[in-house]
Amino acid sequence: MNLVVCIKHVPDTESKIKVKPDGSGIVTEGLNYVLNPYDEFAVEEAIRIKEKAAGSRVTVVCIGPDDATKSLRTCLAMGADEAIHVPDNDFQRFDGVATARMLAAVVKGLTFDLVLCGKQAVDDDCAQVGPALAEFLGIPNVSVITKLEVAGDQKQITVQREIEGANEIVDCSLPALVTAQKGLNEPRYPSLPNIMKAKKMPIKTIAADSLALGPEGAPKVEVLRFSEPPARKAGRVLEGEPKQVVKEVISLLIEEAKVL
Image 1 (cartoon, helix red, strand yellow):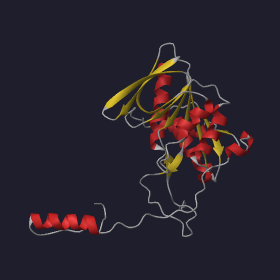
Image 2: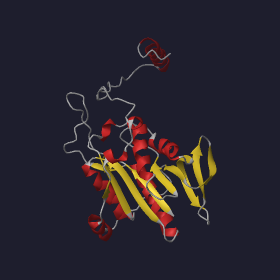
Image 3: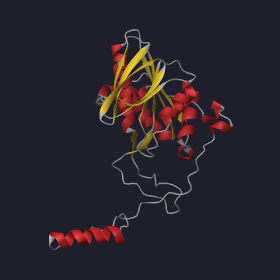
Image 4: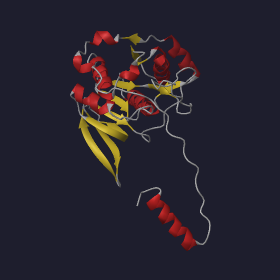
């Protein structure tokens, strides 16, 4: 099987994010970037499929700044066979649909049976790229999966996804695209030998301008300004007899919070 995984290079969730004084973006100096956590599940699942199906290959694709190669090498160290980087140091200007169109232009040039993505990126939380990419590739999509099985003839997959109060099981013909949710697997830690090996592996570069997306590839969303959320107000402790406290709470919800 030929498996393609689309990944994103995102700020580490443990990093403290600061907004630039002019509101034009976030301060990137000293900010640690990592492989998007949900994409780790997608990469791990692709590698597990490869290990079961002889002759399979895993290709990872990433649009992002120059140092996004760090995340690509993480995927290679995990067990991916090939990495493709579309350098774009102004990648934040793209919205989900524009990103999906660019990824589709890359993936269409590859041989693929199954495309995997994380369900969303932890920096923008849009969850748009996977479904939009499937649409542009003209293939079925099943989102937010927690289990995946490939049929013996490698022409169909059976996936499981959590819905409210139940699990949904879907049979889907290949080629197809799935987006990975937490619980699909437990991503492996790359071994030191594989990390050293990944450092020497080539990363294919595709120039964004060479994809010839035209006017349709232009972003549809314009980010006007970044701002930090307002500081949370200190909580208030109400003291007294229960009946009196309940009356005061109701009064505050009506007159101050205005939620009743």
